[in-house]
Length: 311
Ligand SMILES: [Fe+2]
Ligand SMILES: [Fe+2]
Image (tube, rainbow, N blue to C red; front, top):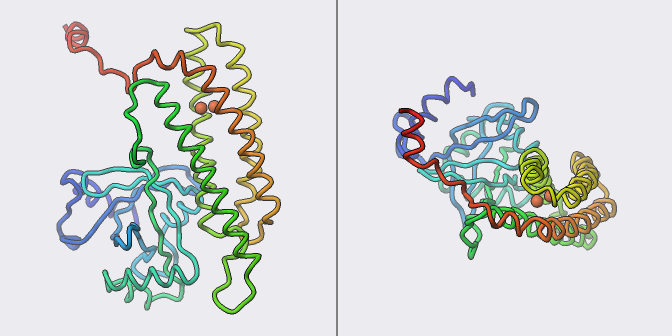
């Protein structure tokens, strides 16, 4: 759908805490912001959604058009998405369901919103059913309040550590299921499977974003205020380069999920775990004492400073 068609709906949604009138009145609507597969630019689409057994689901119906909507192609390339529901905004990992699970979820969606059955009837493609899994640290129970930059760094590192563990558990389960499959019943998805792929890719994206911003912003600032950290920062930057290489290997394997070989994938994943664990530990050991001195989030400018600036 062209952006010009969606724009008034998006603006109305944001101005009214997630409520819109007209043809969408009373429907459950969310805004999904994806990153363009080719352009890298943000793309926001208003979508109907269904909550089912703790899952937040959207359907790539495109009103029954012959092609998948652009947002679906985008989330395959970049699984990390932003969701706005009501007045709330959060990050999520978009995971399309596969095989029998997809069919089961689609049935449940149709029970809640029968219009999707009409859309499915209009097209020969199988309408994708996508679960939006909340991924921001705020959703983690027991997360401590972040009061300084050390807390912020640990928060991101904790997410990376747990996501990588999760991917490893999922990979083991997926490959064990494939190895054990004989017949009958539904065969496990080929290659890596979409779920594992999306989780691993989201991990890689978050890691890359984190290291890029450390290299571009955090480390230059630290180096100028704390010259004694120069040696540690050099080592940390080198580790970033090594990890980026392992990450590129993983992403290349993820590009072709249908044929990706389990053994190679698990080897790369182990290398990543090893390198990353050592890196995060060293970075925390070297930088946390200094980062604990820097309040986070940054304090807003003092009111009298603003006054004197305008006086
Ligand atoms: Fe870090
Ligand atoms: Fe780092």
